[in-house]
Length: 136
Image (cartoon, rainbow, N blue to C red; front, side, top):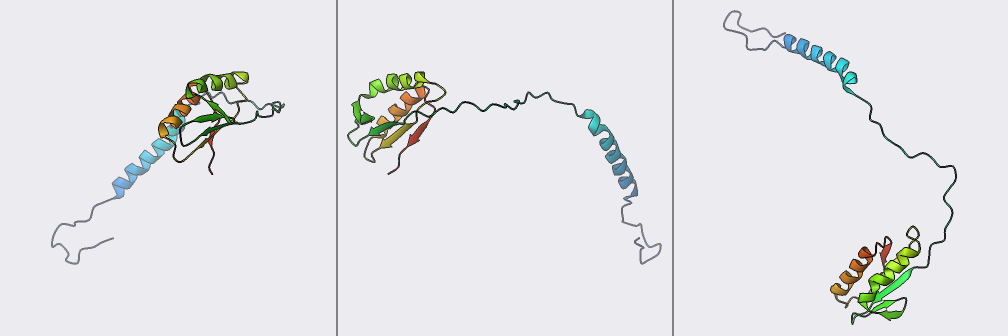
């Protein structure tokens, strides 16, 4: 406790915190009691474990797509026009949509980005999921 050095010389400037502590303890008890009541369960459908593993399927061989400096596109080492890429990619996806081949894109440093953008747009339009870039 703090006592004034001069007895009776003026009002005491210390705040009485006892009522504040009492109010805070009452609020704490109220929140502790009401918090479990406010919680309610949320129904979640979790996947159930499967005892049988999925059948092993061998992935198809990757598609090697090369773009040279002149802008020519090679599908597994054969020249292919850009306009035919989408149909070829769709045919590969339709064979087995769950087991698609990987599209490995190898682009020359001097090739124009526009060609790569067209190739990637064709891959997106044909719904190819596995696309990778080959780094030399």
